[in-house]
Image (cartoon, rainbow, N blue to C red; front, side, top):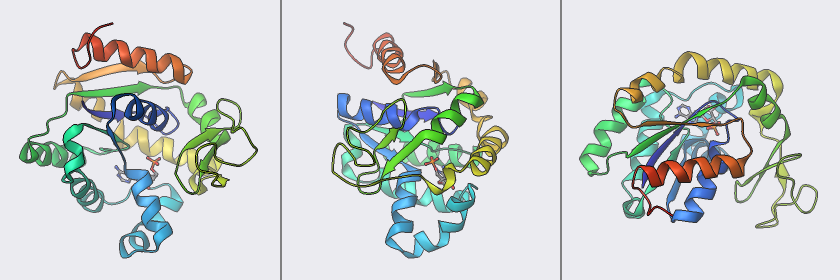
Length: 221
Ligand code: AMP
């Protein structure tokens, strides 16, 4: 299974990517996670992209395309992968297409998480992220068993810097202006499917599983 998850910040792409990767043994490729890790490591790339992440702006296409293509070229992607947060612009989508053709790993489905802005705002406002394993929690929708402690690795839960309300609004605008147009691009390929990102995670997972079975990506139940 080779998928792209498309939708605004706070649509639940990361949550579903985690659930699907566990369920179907896929590689989760989140450009946001990769870039944040680079910033934490203080690598050359991290230093180059830190200001974009902090302000909620998009990292330049050539930088993020190089990061993704390097990750996709690793052998574990042969078992299937989910791209979460990439592509976000038309040049990224075109570069991805060309790169995957070379690797002989074409995308099978693009899932659009249609989500109301107020739902995105509510989700990102309550989001807490593990500083060690990057798993997302939510104060209301997915609270950790112990306050501020990751259920999985015991790491500390933090508020992402770019989840401050003003930055979230800017990220939603950037999504609308630079990313939303990709829906039309992928519609033309016939690979676009839509789920409601407004629904609770369990219900979105049911919708996704139904799509996969209809598309013969998994055996029908
Ligand atoms: P995310 O975790 O997907 O919300 O991404 C967090 C931040 O990482 C974004 O606000 C951008 O600064 C950067 N980023 C992640 N993915 C991309 C991408 N495909 N293109 C450009 N910047 C990205």
